[in-house]
Image (cartoon, rainbow, N blue to C red; front, side, top):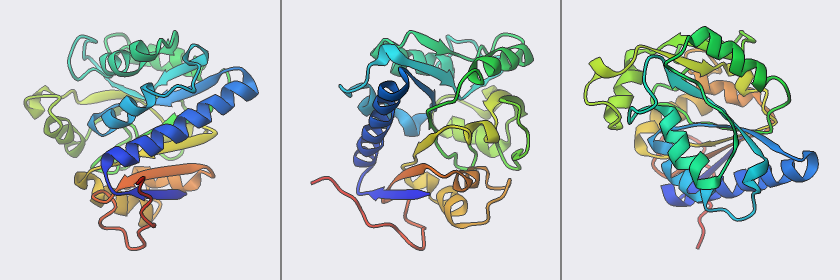
Length: 252
């Protein structure tokens, strides 16, 4: 695992976006298209702003897959990840080939259908984050490290649901759905490359547990350390608890 620490969230996001754009451009050059998985959430906003501003990606040749989505939440809801991706990635870039998870439909049918599309060819790049409870996508602890199923129906734990309230997506925990569709851990690890922008102080404990603790279902994102090509982009706040902090790579 390659861990890079930058002075600010903005610098970390810009560096992550530059690497993601280069990865997509390389895939398009080598294979004619780039198949990617995109994360959502407050921590990804600066990253997606930087990524959608890049000039060296032919977005018409990018195929996008959805990482996770709430079950029972309409696409019109402010917290819907479909709405998030449409507004912050798809419409900004003009991506035409995308596969969103419909949280209003039968979740098992959606998981099966989108999973078949996902497994029709290798994924070039997975863009992911790490949750405050260490979750990877919506794989809360203890996560299933063994299933080969592309998408799972999962329950969301209280810490995950409280994070959604803390980020401002819901006014109260009672309004946060208790179930979601999520890409499985093993499916995420099948991507050729994984990039994880993980800024902000509220992620520091999870970053330490997942990057320096035991690789365990109790720290779901620790599974990233089993992949041969992962880069985690931190700012000084999210890296604050690491014992062996990487050299700060600041753009000056």
